[in-house]
Image (cartoon, rainbow, N blue to C red):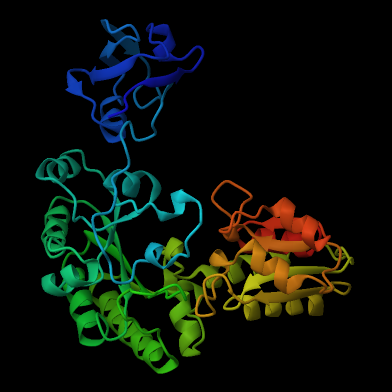
Length: 434
């Protein structure tokens, strides 16, 4: 546990109470603080009687006074006030195991931490929870959490996760549902393992936990070219993708009739692999599985066409280019063509980048590297600016998966780069030169 206080905001309730950087927080109102969840829960009240250990090893007490729910103004050396919980599984489809060697060490760390699930939306498998942690989640009503299910059949789930405790997670989910904990789930679908009748059973079991299980994404397994020595898996072909989409949509239709919500959604990638049109905007309800690539393209297009209606009559007529993964490139081309048909003077082209770094079976924009872009776009007519989607970069940074920066790529290609946020409004602004 790393409960040492890194800094105290100037003028904050904590500073007024005499709390200093270097102090270690032990308890709040008599409750021991193990991690960030304890801190956030027990620091909600207006009066906080805290026990601390000063930098010189002396215990001290203080009282923090603030409005209910306000922040006390404390920042800890560790965000979790603890170390991140590492994954104890050996999933047969683990994407981290399929990364090439020699990348930065943080990319190889697999977390399976319920605290990060609640606070940052990470997915967890529930295989490493102690009974105390299970009880705490229910007692503190830590909700929603995101759960990687993959199968509700205990033996099959244990096999998929490479963990003999895999089946226990389904019983934990039933406990959570009974306690009013909301769960958003994902199923990584692997042809020949957890698809077909196994997928139908999983959807049936999970629907019985509604409203505890609020939404479920069905995502095709991602396979890179770096799979030597790993479990033999095969990718989705067009026929199997079509069968899976039809099965999930059919079951989702039944859930709409029964519960008023679809619950089960296929990732955009499955529709593209099947050669099917994306569902309309209303299909996705409130887009509960957007981060799993469910409805991302549909929402992007909906936003783009809404933005285009309000664009100025005179767009920026300087030629430009946009870069994308292979799966989304046709949609981006269609949007630019529609914009050019409506407003004269728009001159843009889209480049679909093949993923040489991870393999051509990986065709999403979020895993395209700067090196592949540089190699494939060098010498191409790029116009006076290059539009680059934000999801190609590390969160909050300007670095690609292969550690190349946007600035380095811009220098290699000799063109200014405009990073476009993951929404259609910003894409429209970028096209029109705003």
